[in-house]
Length: 211
Image 1: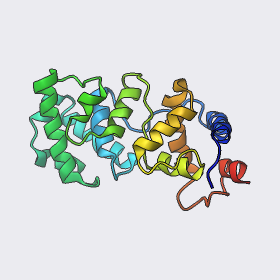
Image 2: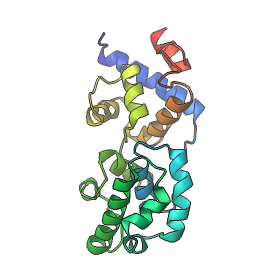
Image 3: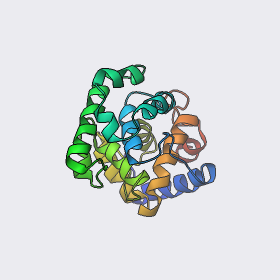
Protein backbone atom coordinates (compact mmCIF):
# COMPACT_ATOMS: atom_id res chain seq x y z
CA UNK A 1 0.00 0.00 0.00
CA UNK A 2 1.36 3.41 -0.98
CA UNK A 3 2.08 5.90 1.77
CA UNK A 4 2.00 9.69 1.72
CA UNK A 5 4.97 11.97 1.22
CA UNK A 6 4.54 13.21 4.80
CA UNK A 7 4.68 9.65 6.12
CA UNK A 8 7.82 8.94 4.07
CA UNK A 9 9.45 12.05 5.52
CA UNK A 10 8.49 10.96 9.03
CA UNK A 11 9.96 7.52 8.39
CA UNK A 12 13.15 9.00 6.96
CA UNK A 13 13.60 11.24 10.00
CA UNK A 14 13.26 8.28 12.37
CA UNK A 15 15.62 6.16 10.27
CA UNK A 16 18.19 8.94 10.15
CA UNK A 17 18.10 9.42 13.93
CA UNK A 18 18.32 5.68 14.61
CA UNK A 19 21.17 5.06 12.19
CA UNK A 20 23.12 8.04 13.54
CA UNK A 21 22.91 6.58 17.05
CA UNK A 22 24.06 3.14 15.85
CA UNK A 23 26.79 4.35 13.48
CA UNK A 24 27.80 7.88 14.50
CA UNK A 25 31.01 7.93 12.47
CA UNK A 26 30.67 5.44 9.59
CA UNK A 27 33.90 4.65 7.79
CA UNK A 28 34.02 3.44 4.17
CA UNK A 29 34.37 -0.36 4.27
CA UNK A 30 36.75 -0.70 1.33
CA UNK A 31 40.46 -0.24 2.03
CA UNK A 32 41.96 2.54 -0.08
CA UNK A 33 44.58 5.26 0.06
CA UNK A 34 43.62 7.50 -2.85
CA UNK A 35 40.96 7.93 -5.57
CA UNK A 36 42.57 5.35 -7.85
CA UNK A 37 42.69 2.59 -5.24
CA UNK A 38 39.09 3.33 -4.26
CA UNK A 39 37.97 3.32 -7.90
CA UNK A 40 39.51 -0.11 -8.46
CA UNK A 41 38.18 -1.44 -5.15
CA UNK A 42 34.61 -0.35 -5.84
CA UNK A 43 34.80 -1.82 -9.34
CA UNK A 44 35.92 -5.11 -7.79
CA UNK A 45 33.11 -5.09 -5.20
CA UNK A 46 30.36 -5.83 -7.74
CA UNK A 47 28.99 -9.30 -6.91
CA UNK A 48 31.81 -9.66 -4.37
CA UNK A 49 31.91 -8.90 -0.65
CA UNK A 50 33.91 -5.95 0.64
CA UNK A 51 35.78 -8.38 2.88
CA UNK A 52 36.94 -10.35 -0.16
CA UNK A 53 37.97 -7.16 -1.97
CA UNK A 54 39.98 -6.07 1.06
CA UNK A 55 41.87 -9.37 0.92
CA UNK A 56 42.84 -9.19 -2.75
CA UNK A 57 43.62 -5.49 -3.16
CA UNK A 58 46.65 -5.03 -0.85
CA UNK A 59 48.83 -7.44 -2.90
CA UNK A 60 47.50 -5.94 -6.13
CA UNK A 61 48.27 -2.37 -5.06
CA UNK A 62 51.67 -3.41 -3.76
CA UNK A 63 52.39 -4.55 -7.30
CA UNK A 64 50.73 -1.58 -9.03
CA UNK A 65 49.72 1.37 -6.88
CA UNK A 66 49.20 3.90 -9.68
CA UNK A 67 47.41 3.96 -13.05
CA UNK A 68 50.81 4.10 -14.73
CA UNK A 69 51.97 0.87 -13.08
CA UNK A 70 48.59 -0.87 -13.45
CA UNK A 71 48.43 -0.04 -17.17
CA UNK A 72 51.69 -1.89 -17.70
CA UNK A 73 50.26 -5.12 -16.30
CA UNK A 74 48.47 -7.53 -18.59
CA UNK A 75 44.85 -8.51 -17.82
CA UNK A 76 46.17 -11.97 -16.99
CA UNK A 77 48.58 -10.55 -14.39
CA UNK A 78 45.79 -8.52 -12.81
CA UNK A 79 43.53 -11.58 -12.87
CA UNK A 80 46.09 -13.56 -10.87
CA UNK A 81 45.50 -11.16 -7.96
CA UNK A 82 41.69 -10.89 -8.17
CA UNK A 83 40.67 -14.37 -9.38
CA UNK A 84 38.62 -15.06 -6.23
CA UNK A 85 36.34 -12.11 -6.99
CA UNK A 86 33.16 -12.54 -8.98
CA UNK A 87 33.41 -11.77 -12.72
CA UNK A 88 37.18 -11.61 -12.27
CA UNK A 89 38.24 -11.95 -15.95
CA UNK A 90 36.01 -9.06 -17.04
CA UNK A 91 37.11 -6.94 -14.09
CA UNK A 92 40.78 -7.59 -14.87
CA UNK A 93 40.31 -6.38 -18.44
CA UNK A 94 38.39 -3.31 -17.26
CA UNK A 95 41.00 -2.38 -14.64
CA UNK A 96 43.76 -2.58 -17.24
CA UNK A 97 41.77 -0.57 -19.79
CA UNK A 98 40.66 2.15 -17.37
CA UNK A 99 44.24 2.49 -16.12
CA UNK A 100 45.41 3.05 -19.69
CA UNK A 101 42.71 5.66 -20.23
CA UNK A 102 43.61 7.45 -16.98
CA UNK A 103 47.24 7.65 -18.13
CA UNK A 104 46.55 8.65 -21.72
CA UNK A 105 43.60 11.00 -21.20
CA UNK A 106 43.91 12.30 -17.64
CA UNK A 107 47.66 12.19 -16.91
CA UNK A 108 47.10 9.42 -14.38
CA UNK A 109 44.58 11.42 -12.32
CA UNK A 110 41.09 10.12 -11.55
CA UNK A 111 38.59 12.64 -13.02
CA UNK A 112 36.15 14.46 -10.76
CA UNK A 113 32.94 14.40 -12.80
CA UNK A 114 30.26 11.75 -13.09
CA UNK A 115 30.35 11.95 -16.88
CA UNK A 116 34.08 11.27 -17.12
CA UNK A 117 34.06 8.54 -14.48
CA UNK A 118 31.12 6.71 -16.05
CA UNK A 119 32.89 6.63 -19.40
CA UNK A 120 35.63 4.45 -17.89
CA UNK A 121 35.36 0.68 -18.51
CA UNK A 122 33.46 -1.12 -15.78
CA UNK A 123 32.50 2.09 -13.96
CA UNK A 124 28.77 2.57 -13.52
CA UNK A 125 26.83 5.27 -11.73
CA UNK A 126 27.09 3.60 -8.32
CA UNK A 127 30.88 3.23 -8.57
CA UNK A 128 31.21 6.84 -9.72
CA UNK A 129 28.99 7.99 -6.85
CA UNK A 130 31.15 6.24 -4.25
CA UNK A 131 34.31 7.86 -5.60
CA UNK A 132 32.66 11.27 -5.83
CA UNK A 133 31.41 11.28 -2.24
CA UNK A 134 34.17 9.36 -0.44
CA UNK A 135 37.19 10.85 -2.21
CA UNK A 136 36.09 14.21 -3.53
CA UNK A 137 33.52 15.16 -0.87
CA UNK A 138 30.85 15.93 -3.45
CA UNK A 139 27.16 15.33 -2.83
CA UNK A 140 26.21 11.85 -4.03
CA UNK A 141 24.04 9.00 -2.76
CA UNK A 142 25.41 5.66 -3.97
CA UNK A 143 22.73 2.95 -4.02
CA UNK A 144 23.83 -0.67 -3.66
CA UNK A 145 21.75 -3.82 -3.24
CA UNK A 146 21.29 -3.29 0.52
CA UNK A 147 20.05 0.28 0.09
CA UNK A 148 17.76 -0.72 -2.80
CA UNK A 149 16.30 -3.53 -0.68
CA UNK A 150 15.80 -1.47 2.49
CA UNK A 151 14.38 1.55 0.64
CA UNK A 152 11.64 -0.77 -0.62
CA UNK A 153 11.19 -2.59 2.70
CA UNK A 154 10.92 0.71 4.57
CA UNK A 155 8.52 2.08 1.91
CA UNK A 156 10.81 5.01 1.11
CA UNK A 157 10.93 4.16 -2.58
CA UNK A 158 9.20 1.85 -5.04
CA UNK A 159 11.91 2.48 -7.63
CA UNK A 160 12.63 -0.39 -10.00
CA UNK A 161 16.29 0.57 -10.50
CA UNK A 162 19.06 2.27 -8.54
CA UNK A 163 18.60 5.59 -10.33
CA UNK A 164 14.96 5.85 -9.25
CA UNK A 165 15.76 4.79 -5.70
CA UNK A 166 18.61 7.30 -5.55
CA UNK A 167 16.32 10.10 -6.71
CA UNK A 168 13.69 9.22 -4.10
CA UNK A 169 16.16 8.99 -1.22
CA UNK A 170 17.82 12.29 -2.13
CA UNK A 171 14.45 13.97 -1.67
CA UNK A 172 13.92 12.42 1.76
CA UNK A 173 17.34 12.87 3.39
CA UNK A 174 19.13 16.23 3.75
CA UNK A 175 22.05 16.57 1.35
CA UNK A 176 24.52 17.06 4.20
CA UNK A 177 23.66 13.55 5.47
CA UNK A 178 24.06 11.65 2.19
CA UNK A 179 27.70 10.66 2.72
CA UNK A 180 27.04 9.10 6.12
CA UNK A 181 23.52 7.77 5.65
CA UNK A 182 24.31 5.68 2.59
CA UNK A 183 27.04 3.92 4.58
CA UNK A 184 24.80 3.64 7.65
CA UNK A 185 22.02 1.96 5.65
CA UNK A 186 24.51 -0.51 4.17
CA UNK A 187 25.88 -1.41 7.61
CA UNK A 188 22.37 -1.75 9.06
CA UNK A 189 21.31 -3.94 6.15
CA UNK A 190 24.25 -6.24 6.73
CA UNK A 191 23.98 -6.46 10.51
CA UNK A 192 20.32 -6.06 11.44
CA UNK A 193 17.90 -5.97 8.51
CA UNK A 194 19.30 -8.76 6.36
CA UNK A 195 17.51 -10.22 3.36
CA UNK A 196 16.62 -13.43 5.21
CA UNK A 197 17.06 -12.44 8.84
CA UNK A 198 14.33 -9.80 8.90
CA UNK A 199 10.84 -10.23 7.48
CA UNK A 200 10.00 -6.53 7.65
CA UNK A 201 8.88 -6.76 11.30
CA UNK A 202 11.93 -8.16 13.14
CA UNK A 203 14.69 -5.55 13.35
CA UNK A 204 14.54 -2.36 15.39
CA UNK A 205 13.63 -0.05 12.52
CA UNK A 206 11.13 -2.41 10.89
CA UNK A 207 9.37 -2.97 14.23
CA UNK A 208 8.91 0.78 14.62
CA UNK A 209 7.85 1.44 11.02
CA UNK A 210 5.60 -1.57 10.57
CA UNK A 211 4.54 -2.30 14.12
